[in-house]
Length: 339
Image 1: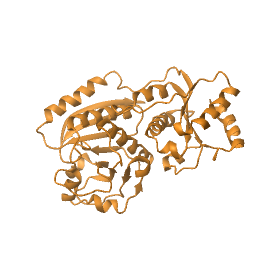
Image 2: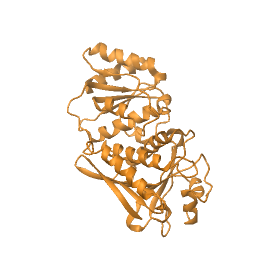
Image 3: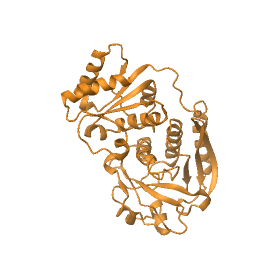
């Protein structure tokens, strides 16, 4: 493994790194060991082709197909990924494999955004994940441009680390060295672009008291909640505009800017919420701020019964299922005490 370049991201007094290597992920040396190796696959397709990382892993004695038969956590319905059980094999220097296999594949930046949304649920596990390695995802058999994927992966890595993704290192590894100069230039370009923001986000003054994260399909219920809150506290500054994901971005800066300017975040949990990529983006961004704030940031409201992933169950939520009016009014009172 040859280190080409790295980007240092400072957040809350800690230094985190995005590192670019040339090497073979199937043969990680012990001194570059990681907790999780990320691979991508077509849905339920783990055929070890000659040009894919899955193929290279098979030649090293690690069968992704076999690991898929006994997954530790399967979150494909929620975040397009599954996590393998611990891998105990001589010469293999990654602890687990995270397989990203979305049912829908958009352009490269969309793919990258989904990859990081997939990583977030596992950063609160035990033992915690601190180092992740990944190839230029989707640039092999799936045909995406390697340079486009590198730029999107690097850009998203810097962003997520800067807002609190609890990883010490993200290692991006390219195979072979024929194009290392062009990759070096792409990585350096992203590094320059983030030069002014690598110290992490600041929250000096909030424009809003609360940002409401919700599915458009639950608009009537959320409008009712907002009406109740503002009726009891007219001066409350609430951000409720519906933001959309931008397909051309690996992370959603316009969502982050609005959410970052809000002191608290109400999340209206429901099956529709969990199926929305934009809602999961908002939840994950708020989650990192919540972990670092002394008085918390996230205020989940459970609208309708849904299969909540474990990391969402860990937070206290207001339970108003299934739109129970008495519970709704009581929850509104409790929310106001936290706003």
